[in-house]
Length: 394
Image (cartoon, rainbow, N blue to C red; front, side, top):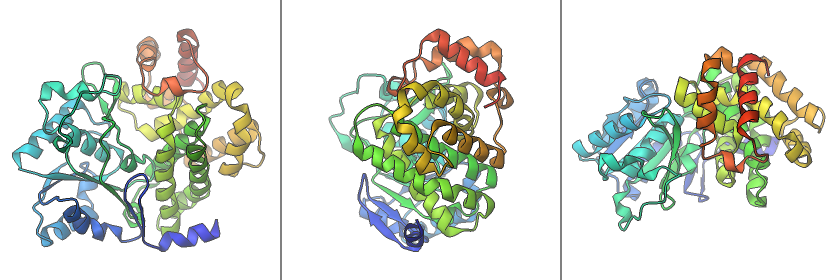
């Protein structure tokens, strides 16, 4: 780990699964990367809070200095909606943009991807790219917009996967917005951008990445490459998250978190599971922070899935750094982390109400992540699990 940690101060270029530019100060490469992929008039997609930070204005100044004409779109929610993405599409077309640079957390990256997929399509066809639909035939892939992703949090990994989570404002469901032939053209991982991340977001986004790796490793599909990547992600994130939480200026810890988050996202090309299915729909209905919702749900889902993941638990516990390589050791490690990070004990504390259990259950049963959960779940059992998660502690 010490050798890996020391490497976090280096700049690197990795080309799997897309070109990934890593290292402190890598944001300075964005203008040249944009020019390389043919972007001259980028739409900067950055949520309203991130857009206020100095590194966003500095990035825009760099781009302008290099002769690129920039427009900014920041009018969207932490859980972006279809209407907000369509507004972004309007601005993209109106400003004559020819590419997108998404800078921020998962909401910015997801919004950027949704606009990139939809900018040249009729607004009434927006949900054609719902992952549950048959993929629309796309004869000209140049109808998709060039996209560069610059994450500023260390949890979603959205910079290296093609899907975007968008809330349907009619059904309140979070849906995966996706086309199999579309990917971001490049990702820029600069750990310096995470130095200003508040403690609560460091915890929530970091646990999001931990959940990605745990759920991906738990998916029963045989995929040893993703399994290895998931365990490496945990080995990087789990020691680093505490350091980053207590000392946000530790650039090596921030780097380990950023790389680990990226790895966890690569691993979930194998699939996710019930934690995300619940979190997507709670987030869609209540607009709760995704990483925090994942955190609250994880212990209950691990207990439910245990009969099907028993043989994998020792590897998860070992990668997390638990005191014992059994299920109790893993749960104890998670609960101690939650106490340290002041994670709420129930969905009820996030504002989720018992009256919405039936509605949530119906929504969850339609979620794209549910089929890859290691243990199937029926409606009645899911209803009990949600009720327990609302009213009981983890």
